[in-house]
Length: 477
Image (cartoon, rainbow, N blue to C red; front, side, top):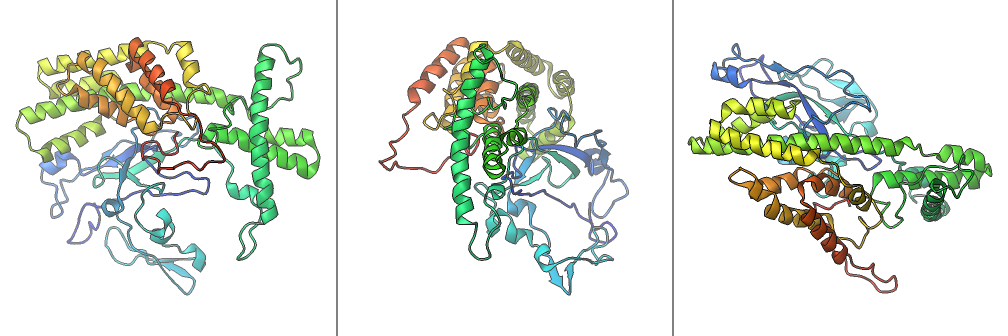
């Protein structure tokens, strides 16, 4: 609630929108956690309203310890919900006068706060609407998105997390801009030359590392670990590969600048722990996805129950929002316990059967040959099927094999939801997540389709027709 010390109390809302210089944007790839929620459903039932605040209560879920740490396990946190600019709103436009940026108002009284402004320079008193989302206030395409919890009005205090590979900003390689003329042309040309050489060095180093693993190289002590940079055609849009190539760019620039190769090698070293971290992230994502699918099964069954009971669409939407909040942080068994009282026994038995089926599928390890294929240089090339094509193919296979095995009445809709909620994962990681749901014949069919759909890259001397990438493929290719 806001303006609670006036006669016009109302539900307030908020949103997070951010765009960073390294290309990271706020999207549903971010994880969210509701710290406080209110007014609660119970207090609204008891009469909580804008004109009667005394019954209003807020649910406080507390702040998890070390939630900001890089090794914090946020696998149980749901994805943040994206909102449009019109839904979230840009808020009050700041003004700048006499070295002061304001005006700040009180969320309780709606009056001008004291102090009402902060001292800063004119170039730091920024209007978010003018500097974010390309300045057109639409926030579409590759722009950042407004984020909040699933309930824009009643999710009061939120925590957000995003985990990704740190990359070097392009500005680090372009030198100091000259006033009105942009980057130094010589430094710009050198940066692109270093990038091209880095790709070649990283690819060659991959071959050397393979030789070292087989015992062909006796001295690998000073080797940098760049084994993630195995495919020079697709490194640009994959953060882990981009980080490895940028490390080699730094090595080449430092070596050319200082002449000290050993020092440059130490600066550019990429820790082997990056691969271990990637494996840990994939394992945590698999746990999150298994739990999320269980929530989707229970949620769909609850919707079916409410429709059968004659509830309105607004009541169903409110109940679904409540259910999603209650399942935050719950294990699969906890989600089932929460669901059981909401359903008639027959429908709950079907839900339990579906969830146990999914658990059995995810308990099976991915065959090593399949895993190696997914993360090989045969997958994710520029000529391979786009992300949305892969999603459509897998959904088609699952509708034919998984959907008939489920008790849900609209099992085909479940399949499409199962594919949709993985949208925040990278191209290969998406395939790995979906792999347990596919039968052996599905996997063979998918691999045959995938390899048959790959087209050779266009010749360099013949311009190729280009199309805009779909929103589902994006930069996660």
